[in-house]
Length: 317
Image 1 (cartoon, rainbow, N blue to C red):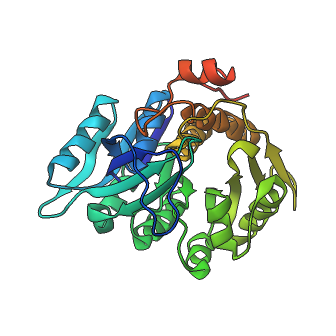
Image 2: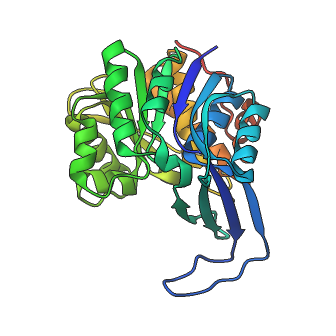
């Protein structure tokens, strides 16, 4: 069984479905709101557990009802939450999500207790003893940097989902400079890191190559329905491979990136070759878009098989 440790955020999501996304200054009405657990870290932990991994979640919540709901949701999926710290007097992170009829979304996040992740969580993540440490960027940059450095020191494989990307390109470059085993970003995040526009598979491929130049051993740039680009020495110096997307009927893209990252982590922990691992991750991400909800929409193996024809668990060649 692959063993993953996830160091990241736990939020409560408030989602509203609308016919179209609002323009600046505009109010758009939706029929109702859905309140459910989320956060990139928690989503990735749930997705990995559903795909057969043994998962430990490391992070922080407030001492409020939202925090209790977030922890209970993880426990219900078999995720070990012993490393989730409850902080007295703090509010649990909150995400406000608007989704249109095509499945596109806009998200605003209040960090809450996620902003207090620090040395205790970094130490807990490194003591977990898993095969892969999965990191996402809804926690402080200093915690990410410390976790990456400590993981390098003990030879623990890290998968960094640099989402959201730091506002300053220098901050992103500093995180990557000393090396990271796997880096996953989407087109807009790649653009933020590199300081240039990234749109479509060809530019995603060039971006993945350049991200390897910044310190990533493997770099993946996802491009939604247009596929994903992966680069690294395994492809060839200065080369990138485009992994085509799976054709599915998308209804909600929220959580698809987290499904991709989690599935990639599970595949890497299982020893699957790089391009095959990205293809497997793409199947999970695509399947997530066919289902409404964030954690509710994260797929199980039977869902992936039905939507894409890909069989989980994936195995090393």
